[in-house]
Image (cartoon, rainbow, N blue to C red; front, side, top):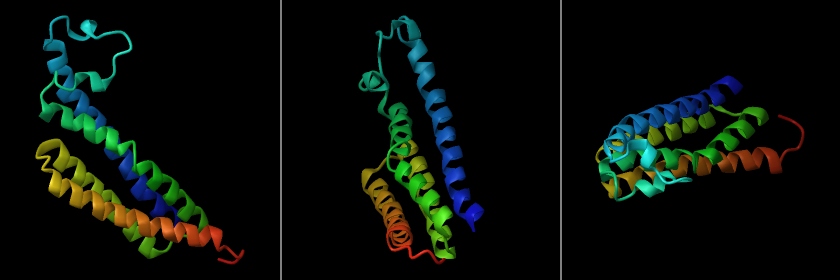
Length: 147
């Protein structure tokens, strides 16, 4: 069951890399069109410095990539705990649900970005994560040594 529990995390890692490349592919062309191109960036500049400089629809990919570096870190830790402690079929299904919802969330945010839908997708994925985290807690804090 460990491999089945880890597979959704591996897919989310790969999806995060897809979003990284999508972000770069949409941000770099307008950056290079700016006077001075990449060389005009101030020393120590960060992506947030591009807010208001690049079109919002270009920045949406960056915003989503940032989101994939936030809450999913809790997902990765939870998945590891469950894989080590003994995940069940429900855990695996919830992990896949979390990943599917995060991918849909990414595509929605990067293209349409209507906040009400994005918020609903985020909330649904958070419910999956919450149930996984509760089970991880039960398996660890209430562990009696028998599996």
